[in-house]
Image (cartoon, rainbow, N blue to C red; front, side):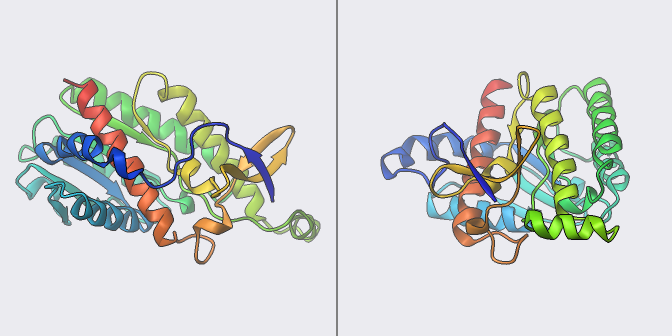
Length: 261
């Protein structure tokens, strides 16, 4: 794997002297309703959010449910959106929630896809087009919603030698999927990152403790992969990475709420 410098301030766990101001910002989330649709890794992220909120005395009510519209707010409400490896069902689940009369007014909404939604080189194109269509529908039909976008999570990838051997045998490689995920994430960053809040989960997963990004080069571009230091098995996050991810999510949610005032 190639390690490229990130160049920005490390996304490490927060400094102790930053806790009071950050806690005050995060407390704004506790006064709003957040709908977070996800599958698999999202539960790990939400566990990290709940742990961090308790550690920092943020009065955040975290609720996991199958019926998010039935939960009275304010609350951080997370739910399994759609089905595994079926992004269309995830988009449809989010739209059904927003079209339900009992859902909260003025919610903050985040839909996170799974790495399993992109497994082949061309998967990212229809996925992004479908997501963009969903965003446009939300912006047109549900103007009270504050949208937060998310990059798609990463996995580790095999070595270049193994990838070449697999391609020789006509097999799909994890590098091919990594390239497609990276291209999807770059589309999210370029399409929404200038004007809207983006929860850049992939960037956090790729970042090593030494402030470099894990990945491999293709045509002069670093294809981000999950850093081995941040995972226990190639997909699931370590406890320390989970905490950093939770910090980043609370930060982006609080920034979105502040910007929407």
